[in-house]
Length: 208
Image 1: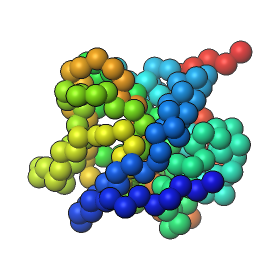
Image 2 (image 1 turned 180 degrees about the vertical axis):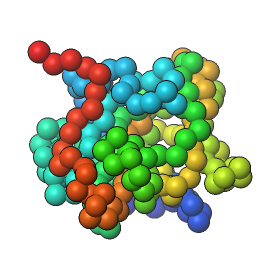
Image 3 (image 1 turned 90 degrees about the horizontal axis):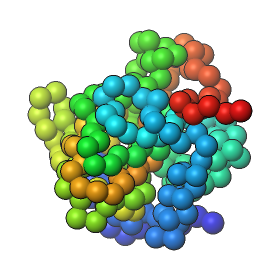
Image 4 (image 1 turned 180 degrees about the horizontal axis):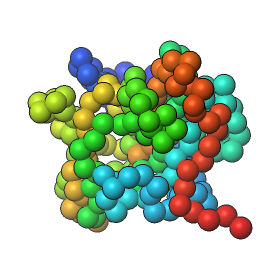
């Protein structure tokens, strides 16, 4: 069942924040399902992601239902977050805890398949769990050397920002888990799209 659109949103030229995008019981179910997933382990992402956990799903638009079939707990997020003008996606749960951080970078996670791939059109982040009174852990958005925003995450917030922005996550300095669900959304040309897998899971987990 689709969720009612929230009423409170903050929009700038580069990012949009929607407060309480999903109800608390849905977020709790999502949190539990992500952490129980056998693919969820030490992150497969690059060295910018310091002491983080997660896994990634790469898919083309026409394989969205395959993602939902294997990961039904992602279905409502994808229904709300995915843009109609994008055709390839890089989806990953991302968990930080005390001592974790993400260093400044621009998302181009599909470059493993196409080295000169464009940046995403947009990046969507749902904050599934944020520790109360968290110290650190803010998302910092920048264009070039200019900082555009420093955003303190809140449980249930859905944030979307321009995919060409440099961004980072400040070191988390309090106990507890900061869990988000991130989707890089790409509008690829025919050459770029041809280099992408239809559907692929990236994880350090081993399945027997």
